[in-house]
Structures are given as structure tokens and as C-alpha cells.
Image 1 (cartoon, one colour):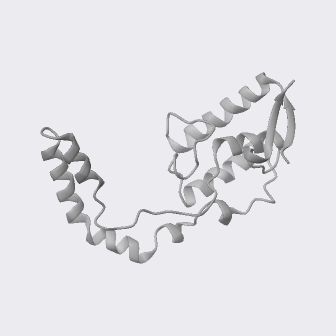
Image 2 (image 1 turned 90 degrees about the horizontal axis):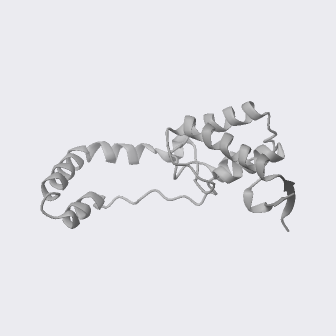
Length: 158
């Protein structure tokens, strides 16, 4: 059952714009929307999202005592394990060749250029089973004054 929050459109819009501006300043991203994910869309990983959340909580004086960071984000150590970093360093010359090839193919065939760019040297793309917070979650938390996921709230205009 969703918690119903009665709010004016003006108040919701003001909160939306404040959180959007905050995230633009923190991430450097220009286009941020309600469903923008903090880590995956705004590239705030590890210490960056931790610092952003800390600033957000302090700025708006929020209670995040029920928030479990590990359920939503990965730490720097989890993101950049030593084996993964070492392998990427070893592959730097291949990434340079890949970049040069994509530039060579680009004027002749955008399709081949895209194929070259998407080649990942058989490395698995990083995936996570964590629930990435969204801008909507931050707006909801700001309005509630404490940590809340947007999916558990229904806003009703009055």
C-alpha cells in the first residue's frame, strides 16, 4: 500500500527544481529527470554518490537513519577491484588501437565504427543488483523529511 501525500503542484514543482539543480551541480549533467538514476545515469559512483548523499542530507536536514547504503550503491572497492583495474591497465594499448580504428572507419561506415566502439575485449559490463536511487527518490525524501523511495509514495494534488 502506497502512502498518500497531499501536496500542491507549486510545492512539488519547487522541490523538483531544487533537487534537479542540486544534482546538476553535483554531477555536472545537464539533463536530469525524475527517473534519472544517481549512479547509472548521473555517473555518481562510490565516494561521489556517498558525498552527494551526505551533502543532500545536510543541506535539507533529512533523517536517513533507515537508509542502508549497501542496498543502493557499491563502495569504491567493489567497483574497482584490483583484478579489474589491472586488466584494464594492461588493455590500454588495445583501447588506443580501438579508438584509432573507429576514427578510420567513421568517414566510410558509421556501422563499422559503432561495432569497433562497442567491442569490449571480452570484458563483462559491470552490472549490479542494487536498487539505484533516482531523482524522484530524493525529491520524495526531501518532501517527507526522511528517506523514502518514490515507489512507496503517491502524490495527490490539493
